[in-house]
Amino acid sequence: MPRAATVAYGHLHRAPSISNVGRVVLQTTIAASKAARPKVIPMTIPFLNIKITLDEFCPPLAFAAVMVDFFDEIYPIAPLVHRPTYENALKNRLYDTDPEFLQLCVAMAAFTVTTFPQRLSSYGWGGPDLTVAHIVELASVIVRLNRGIDKRRTMVEYPTVAAVVSRMGLSYSCHHSGEFNNGWSHANEAVLMFRELGLYRAEAYTGLTRAGAVISRRMFWVLYIMQM
Image 1 (tube, helix red, strand yellow):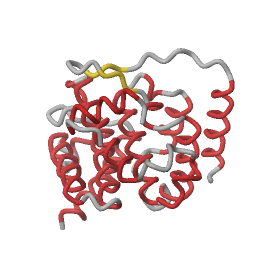
Image 2 (image 1 turned 90 degrees about the vertical axis):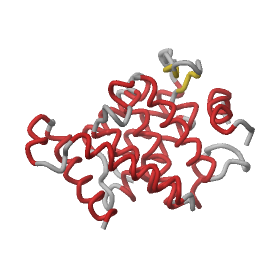
Image 3 (image 1 turned 90 degrees about the horizontal axis):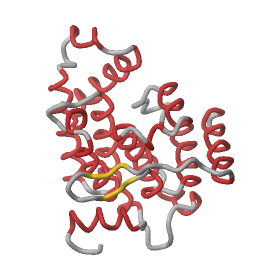
């Protein structure tokens, strides 16, 4: 586990413990890994002085392979993101500068890995000691720590649609890996955020982008069914 991720994990636990577009993303990532990449300025968690990037969670080539499976296998039955917006953000490496998109990427990657745990070794993600359960727990840690980067946008009191989706992605991941209590914790947080946004009322959609409105309607039914 990368040093920064290990530190984040320790702070909370006090102990060590294919679609065509998808293939384009994969090929772009491979090419970028071979070329000189611009220096990424890691985001710092206030008070803990922990620097976190997507690469600390998942190696670039492994993440690209996971995203191929996400678009090919999961998105058709669980379209939790607005695909054109998400793919464009991936190509522009928005996860290097936007904490909320970083959270979303981490959540979707964890969702994919827990859906296809037998594929973990083929991704080239970690060694034999890294399990799906470890990935889910680390994803939860990163998302929860990342909330503090910009409290105006990422805390439950000031949520966004992207934050709701990332919590539901983590909820699915936790349930898939047998962490049911954590799964319901993330789901409940998603519900609180959705209610704070008022997206159960038609008038709340007037201020959203088209992409935000599409995802919000999908999330409404996901959360509605979950609470039935």
